[in-house]
Image (cartoon, rainbow, N blue to C red; front, side):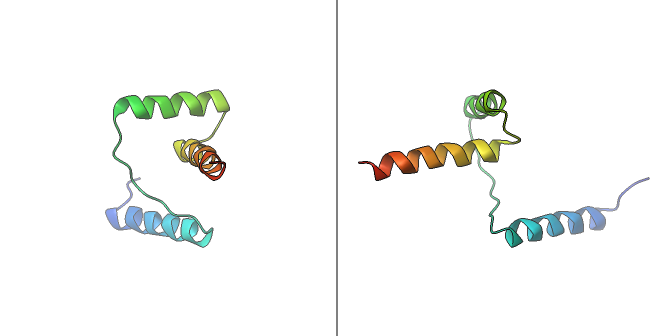
Length: 69
């Protein structure tokens, strides 16, 4: 069974709409491989589902540190 390009595109659009409906935002980041490897290392160590969760945690740590200054 093959899926047409239009079906795939519509599934991607539907996923993006669900993300927005949840009050979230999706973006693409261009990062060095070493940085991605580090994110993956943290992801595995912390038992997180994806790199986005790692970035969210790191940003929150940075936000707390900035507020304490």
